[in-house]
Image 1 (tube, rainbow, N blue to C red):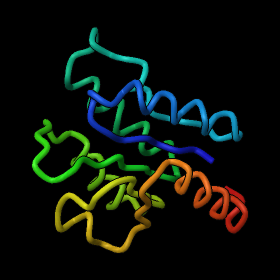
Image 2 (spheres, rainbow, N blue to C red; image 1 turned 120 degrees about the vertical axis):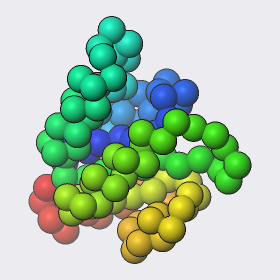
Image 3 (spheres, rainbow, N blue to C red; image 1 turned 90 degrees about the horizontal axis):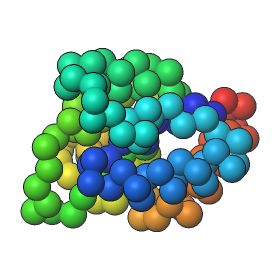
Image 4 (cartoon, one colour; image 1 turned 135 degrees about the vertical axis):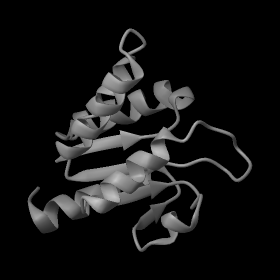
Length: 125
């Protein structure tokens, strides 16, 4: 399956390890931002991220505990994925009312992997 991983930039190394686990299971991770794109303009980065979400069928949001400050680009990505009818999984707490929309919430990456295995079996994505 083609999967986009969304999270705060500060968690990039953690999400890179998740991407490796997904790739080891045969999935394609479309999140180019994980490679680090500091040399790109913010506008180019944003368009690349939206294109990467377009290329994915599954969107995974790694959320933050209440009271955590962050810049918010990942919230835009979540809304974009929701509007474009991606399969959405949340790893962590529901951060806002929009995260309360019925999507799959899990607590751990291991739970996420099990859910994705089931989705792949059901839909042959």
